[in-house]
Image (cartoon, rainbow, N blue to C red; front, side, top):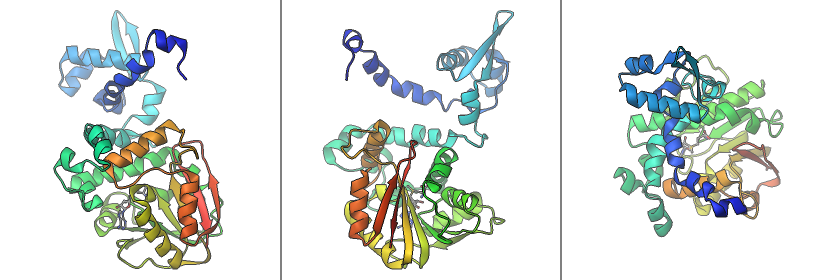
Length: 339
Ligand code: SAM
């Protein structure tokens, strides 16, 4: 509902209009490195920028409460706030740097064609990047560099939401776990850390598995193994539990059902399937972030975000029963079904 203040002076609309200005800040160099009591001139010198440009950038970061400025002898000395130190600096364990980088460099370009996506009802890879999206992940992985940036994006959010989704249900009864489309292995790492008895296999496309082995999962991690394959075309091995984290939201209902039926056939009797997705409210009235993610799925993929009953319906149609839903209160939620 609009407050009468909004009608008098449309602050909300102005904030929305300029939202992209703020989103571009968070990738700026001074924020992503450890910054303590440095003057704008020193920062500009270190980063080889103009002093004037740097000064304006730093001032705005102070306005956004991402830096604070300590005035000494008339000169401002800039340091990260606690928020930017934890979530924006590149090397922090909870860093969102790679999520922000992908949003800023890739998703931002796709969203330029939002109106076309809505008009045509399909993703905009061709216009944004000049590549056909006939094979969605061929388009997403159009170069090794893009693939690794995407994998870092996937990895990054589990720094802040990973534990919540793997502990939303007690998964300790399941010893062998297949993480289908397990990508960089971030969810697999959360599983082996929360469930000391579990063994997790990351199942993903061959080139993703190669990249995960090289850059993301240490060979010392004895409880995580890999399986190269295409979950639509190749057999899925038997397991106690399957995880599909942010997989179904990439695909149409028809493709989701095809995959779920395959998973159900492979699943050991008494086993389970854990979906990890951002859930819409039943009446689609929110949460706003998930509504925006659903638009993003339109612009970037073949899928959509769904409500709990939409996922339950798909899982039941594939043969899963006893389906339970847990909202975590963070970005991603969990749905568990049994065979
Ligand atoms: N589950 C990960 C997470 O939540 O961080 C990654 C989700 S990402 C949106 C989708 C994943 O599915 C990617 O790792 C992608 O390579 C994988 N994928 C897409 N098509 C696939 C296929 N046909 N067979 C196996 N994996 C596939």
